[in-house]
Length: 424
Image 1 (tube, rainbow, N blue to C red):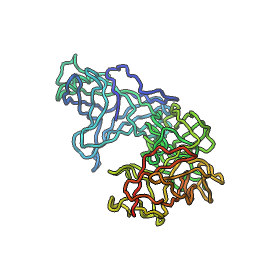
Image 2 (image 1 turned 60 degrees about the horizontal axis):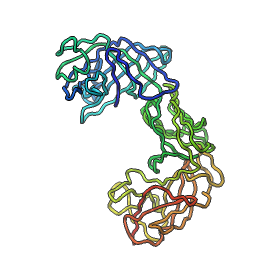
Image 3 (image 1 turned 180 degrees about the vertical axis):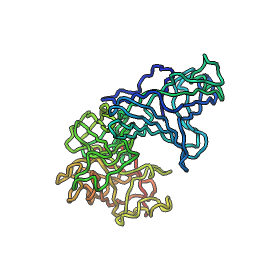
Image 4 (image 1 turned 90 degrees about the vertical axis):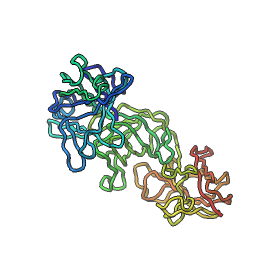
């Protein structure tokens, strides 16, 4: 959680460039903000934050600062709410960013959790909510206790236990979405490049106005996936992507099929504006097999592989009680899954639920400890989008719970380091 707080209208440098920035400027909050010094060292202070007017709802304490604002949606009222569990003292802290600094970042005390929500009640009647800490505020004429009037500043209060600074605040809130990184789906390798038809994960701030939303049947137009979800849209190379999940910090989307290769701009738009383009590399293919973090066990990163019952996972017996597990044996047929393996025959474009039998052209090869597996099927999974299925016959390899599983596509080796469990 990071918020820069300039005191007495100190100059602040913005964190990154933004396109089509949409800023709400607020003045004369109706509630006081109080910082109480907790002490510090080396000129770096820390204060407890008491944020505006607080009310306990039986589970959480919600503390609000509100003020009139101008800007987004023609202006209106801004409300910034700090929430934390329980009814005790605020666990939010204001921490000097450097020795002697009056600029701070917000944190939260160990063992606590909380959230910051910014709502803009626009004068035109719309209410837009952001789960964001991308705002500034300043004191115009604060009052201090425990330190001299000439030392009445945030940094000095943080260094002085029990000293306080309090008063009404003004500031700005930047509602613009900001993209910080783009990768292919993390559970399938999380590569820095993407490919047509593959899945990408976009990380940043202000990417959505909802806590989280995953696409549902109602979001589809027949078999066509949505290009907008929760008010968020994504383009890559100027073409709309197909969105399956949005939250303020992450958006998951399928790359359109006809996107050109090379560097391509990724742009997120939502009620807060349009992000600056983030350049992502698009390759013809960017293949990865399903191997999520939950399968990264003490022995290494296991690939997700299933027996034909679609219930039992290929893992060492007893490694988990969450799912049935068993070692694969030579001659068994197992299934692994992937993304980013390229076009199939017949062609099925991105953004369309797979409804027909299809095949990936020859070129995929999986190996167990360097011994090629027989490939029985390779293609997109019916009822899904952009998900490939590979049915493999386990070759005759020595029993081990750490058999290396490698693959190649068109003669190019995949880069994931994966293992699988094989018994006798």
